[in-house]
Every structure is written in C-alpha cells, then in structure tokens.
Amino acid sequence: MANDTQVPLELLRIAGGSGAVRVHAVAGLGAVSVDGASVVVEGAAATVDGGSSRVEMRVPEGLDLVIGTSSGRVEVLGSVGSVAVITTSGKVLVDEAASVDVRTKSGKVDVNAVSGECRIIGGSGRVTVGRCGASHVTTDSGRITLREAHGKVHAHCSSGRVDVTMVTASDVDAETVSGRITIAMPADANVRVDTPASTTVGVRGEYDCVVTARSGTGRVVVR
Image 1 (cartoon, one colour):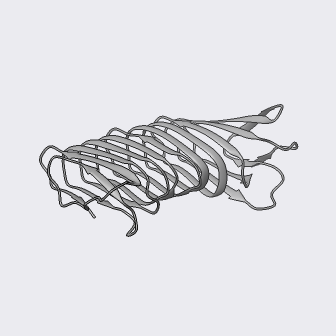
Image 2 (image 1 turned 90 degrees about the vertical axis):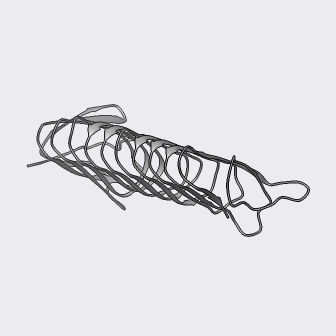
C-alpha cells in the first residue's frame, strides 16, 4: 500500500535497516508516495521509517534527502536537491543531485552528476563520480575515479588507484599509499605540479592551478 503526503515538502528523511531504499524523483509530482513504510509529516519535512523492509518511493524533483541505513542498498534516481547518505555497508547510487555527502564503511559508491559539491568518505569500496563541482573523496581501500571535475579536488586513499579528469583549471590534491595516480588537466591550463616523481606538464610564468600528487608505491602521471 502506498502512503502519500498531502503537503509540499522541502526535506525527506529516510531511515532504513537491512532493506534497500529506492527513491525516484519525478518531474511535476506534487506529493511523496511511499511503498513499504509510513510517512510522518512535520511542517515542510517528512520522515520515513522503513525498518528492515525494502522501501520504494516517488518524490518531487529537487527535494532534499537524508538517508540512513545499516546494510541496505541505496538508489536515488532522477534529479533531486542535496543528498546525504550514511550507511554501514551497501551500494550507494545517486543519479543527479545539487550536492552529495556520502559516508560509508564498505560498499561501492556511484554518483552520476552533481552540480555542486561532492563529498564521499568511505572505507572499502570503489568510488566513481561523473560530472561534479568541487570534490572531496577519501577511502581506505578502493579505486577513486572522478570523470568530469569542475572545481577543486581532494582525492585520498590508502590502497587503490586514483584517476581524475579536470574540466576546469582547478587545484588538485591526490594521494595514495599504494596505487597509481593519473590526473588529466585541460589542454590550455598552465599547471604547477608538486609531486616527487611524475611525468609532468611544465609551467612557464604564472600558473592557473596547482596539482599535488603523491603515491607510496605507484606511478604518478599528470598530463
């Protein structure tokens, strides 16, 4: 049975246990519709408690989300506002959001597009981000891939490869204890590179940005 809200919302909080959480943002939708849990509305915010059951919901585009689970998979499809996810384990997928903040101990994280800041702090598990603004990604183990970064990047992991492709000439700070680092800068960027050993782009005169890259056991390439 679906439970629908009757008032416009600005924020939706979702609490889950071991069950999956799936949110689908729909253009033109005026209310939140939830399957598998009840909805409690307080002013412009609502709370969904899914327990250990699977929860599926349809929400208006642009809605802000706060999601917490213990081990369930989290999927956010469509275009939403800010998204905050805290989970112990379980894959996290975000399609399109204004900003993203994900905290997980283990589990793969995939983010397709973020217009603003993207912050991901993980334990073990690969992190892949498509289009994003400023980004801060930290993992204990697992490859970090940023495919289209439009702002300052901080990418650190203890064990794993780091691949960053910059669309704008912005500062990059990348580090891994074990693994290769590859950073691709725009062709017209004048880059100052600060790294112990690398294949680098030289800088003449003033520079647009600074790339700092360090790897304990892997090769560092800035191109």
